[in-house]
Image (cartoon, helix red, strand yellow):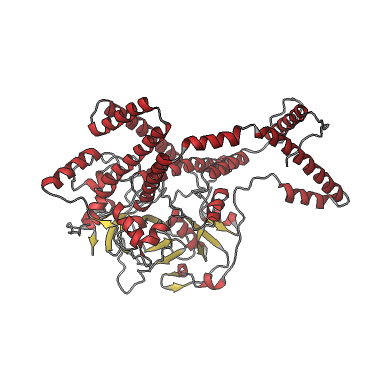
Length: 620
């Protein structure tokens, strides 16, 4: 770089944070033992991530320059070992560029205090109400309380990078469009190639399985067999990826891997030991089985550059020949490691009043008419009268409604909120949301940012599914395998004939004809009670009446963000570790701001910072 930097780091894991000392005037800083450089971070969920952001300290009155960040996935760390790794820094969490920003060397150690059984079970909700609450609205977010503007700005950049949700730029737009195009092209081409491979028997075992399944279904025409066969294809696909991307991955050869047997043993006896080593066997039948497994799973031969040139190493569908991982020397201005180090094995019914008739057919006709009117009222069909003027809603409101519907469709799993603050306008300024001076762009950027959020939701869902299928989170992929096994057993032994018989009786049986009559009488009684309640309220003021209607039936507005409550804890703010900067204990500015840290079992980051460069990794 052209000038020296005063580097220091922010470390975030869940609601916990840490700040290192400032190393002045040094482009290659090193935090020696006397400095503030180490911390112990409690982990409440095994799917947590550790975010490390590096900044150039520019004093307390100005914002710091952001150098880069790295993300460490807890499920991929071996337990009980000390790792010294070098990881390349990135500015963004979604935008890909080839800028070299340097690297950071970290020393990490993971210990499960309650055993690996608690770590595996942390992927599940604690109770059924938690599941119901998650399906209706976002859960209470995990936040980092920031006592001043500088820590708020730096923590947000550490967790989300420069392309944080809510911002908009041409680079972010281009990144989303390029990622969608890449996924589409690879899915189409991969599907075509796999179909041709099956037809031409390029992998005899796979072709034989498809041929057997096809002919078995033609002969038996069994729906149970078809469902079982489809599920088995998913199971075999995940098993193949387990062998290729977990057991024989570059990270496995360097750090070891979590095996299915080891995680099952941890669930049963709560012992550590889900870490395994690669497939063994150098001669005889073991060597033959190893070669057969490698050929069936399509596992390539090991090379020194496999860790950076393998498939999906940098991001989903990245190929090693085009998008390689960056080594330590390539990320830095000069070599950071001279020689290779040997490592260990490693979702009010109201109808018009109609005359009561004793004829059952007339009653049913009334019910059908009332249901039709009620359905038309709910459909909100556009008025065809050209003289009628309806209230026009702004484009921003329509985009927010679409955004909210997409959130509901994804069960609020991918929360795109960045912060919670008493003064949202000031917080957006501090995070540099929509800072353009162009008045047209200033009006359009919020709409474009909301549209990008909608696309990012779908991309996040795809990344989460991709990471499960390709074992980027071994623990979550293990639970997916267990779920598939249980589902196949259920499909095989489930009494489908009796099930569909009961469902047919309940949904389509003749008893529903009489249920309509009962519902019609109940709706009449409910309507009379409603009219009586309304007559009692006529003596009240219009203000009280409107308030009652809003409370009883709802205001009809869609609330995209859940209500935010702020509880101020002055002792917590004043004792925050984020205030200890440059060897000085600072004071909070009295404003409450919180940065939301993603905390869901599904990993939906685009980039993979793991595994590290083997040439600069030490394992003890």
